[in-house]
Each structure stands twice: as C-alpha cells, then as structure tokens.
Image (tube, rainbow, N blue to C red; front, side, top):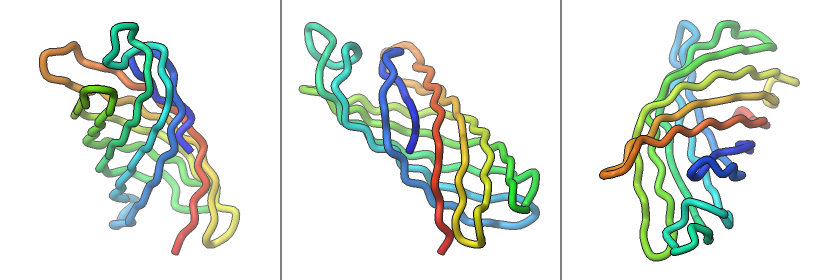
Length: 142
C-alpha cells in the first residue's frame, strides 16, 4: 500500500501493485502501478476545486540492491506516468522519479518493507508537479 501521494499538495491515499525481475549483479527492473479513488478538497476540475478523482499511473524503472540477503536496502530511478480522471477532464502527466527503500525477508517467499519516492511530473500548459510518496509494502515471491 502506498501511504500517500498528492494532488495539488493535498495528501491522498493509494494502493500500488508492483512486479520486479532480478537481472544480475544487484540490479532489478520493476513496474509499479498505483490506483487511487478519492475525494479531494483541491485539484479537481470543478469550480470549487473539490471533487471525486480516480487516478492510475505507472512507473517503469531499475533499482540497485545494496545487499541481497535477508535485509535488502535499495535505490532506484524510473519513468513515471499518471492520469487523474476528474469530471469533465482527464489530466495525463509524465515525468521522472527516484525511489529508495528497504525490504526485510521473513522467509524465502515473503517480505515486508518501507519505501519513499519523488516524482517530477510535466503537464502541458501547466507548472511542473512534484509528488512525494511513502509507503509500506508486503510482497510475495512466486
């Protein structure tokens, strides 16, 4: 679960699905897909700025594992996209991001972790949007 994301600096909750594939020498490639359904006090395309928002996005990136043991601290970089659906318009954004985290393996197939990320999104005809997020993760390995 991704702890927070923001819409025009108003914190929001999101759930994130992630898949990764180990390459070699401590590198992994990952795909992260966040989903958000929220009522926001600001940032919606309404006259008051408040409204319902559905958001979906995607991060495709590479991370480096400093350790490959039971405790795995890592850093990564990714390409980020997001689409916020408000009535009547959708707002697509694309940008770049960084992420940092640590995973603790409880056994061979289950881990818990903490992570944080920063994304810089660009939207046509608008100012750049900064997005900070932090979260906890529960992962299983197939």
